[in-house]
Amino acid sequence: MFDPYATHLEALVNAALETKGNILELGCGNYSTPILSAVARHRGDNLFVKSSSPEWALQFTDFADVELVDWGSWVPSGRYGMIFLDNEQLTFHRIQWLPELAKHCDTIVMHDSDAAMQHAHYPEMISGFKKIVTYNKHRPWTVVMTC
Image 1: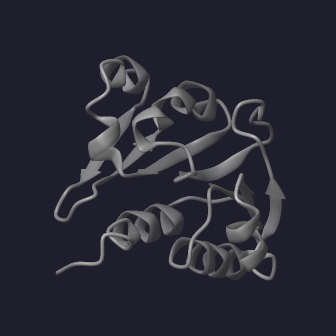
Image 2: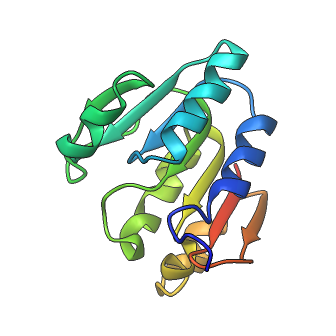
């Protein structure tokens, strides 16, 4: 059985290696945060993490610039090579961030995309992206979107 918490790694690593510039991770985790931190440091860039979970966020302060946020009032700012969307919101609702995040980066990686794809507005939310690649060998799926 494949670890459902690690199905995003192939997409995440490929996208991180193909982009340049700082990385923003929305949410944090035992797999993604250390890997993204290593890629960013290797390139001389920074990893910024936004999380609404103090329990999770405090585990990763050695890897990134971590900020606790309230997803109901947080507003994206800055410019990034890549944004990894895997925050603590229900995956079904993550798509609401796509149009705004696309203004702040070159690439978005969204984990648990198979759940988000069930949302009635998913086609509309992804319509402005230049390229979309779905990693669907294992569930949950991950999608990489080029802005």
